[in-house]
Image (tube, rainbow, N blue to C red; front, side, top):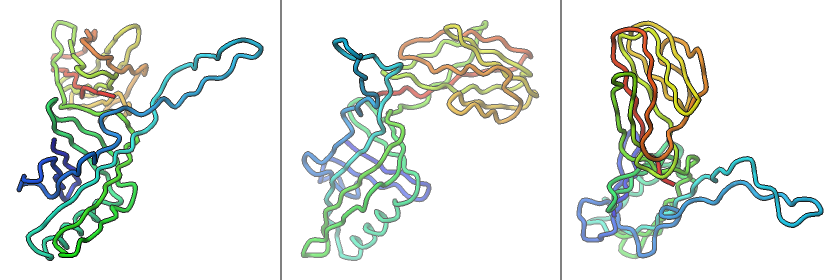
Length: 243
């Protein structure tokens, strides 16, 4: 397993193989919490008055995720170790992308460093242990983006994950479009210039959303109905999501 913590300026690489010279540190035995499981639901049941049991909640949603990675490192010199300490501390107070590579390929989470790394220098001043606690407000793990071009009024897309995910629509040479799935639809109108619209935020890069009933894509294959005005191209992309 390899875990990378990516910022706009640096990438810190952690591995489960302490002999891997390409990594900055190795992950200690039993050193990962909050990654392989899934956060608990936020909802709690409310008791039914004067009856057995409880009411079902209107919906079930997940808590955020907290990821803890306990690491160790041995550097060639005290100067190399001091530079690594600076790099670890520089992760604080900025967005992080956590990329996990294992037998299933790579998946990503986003969050920020939620606690002091707690670096502990060993006697030689060339080795240390530290812990990275990353708070992920979105608990889902996402795979590489998949993009499909609409053809003959349909965009067939597959969410290979286990959780619903929000699509993104990109178009060029089109003055309007409507996408529909399972009784819900989104319509947009604007100029023929390139445009992008992420259903998670519903803020188009240009033009206006004229009908907003945004829908996520469930696990499996979805056949999205596509109506366009103009002779341009329209693509639908998504990132498969896992709990």
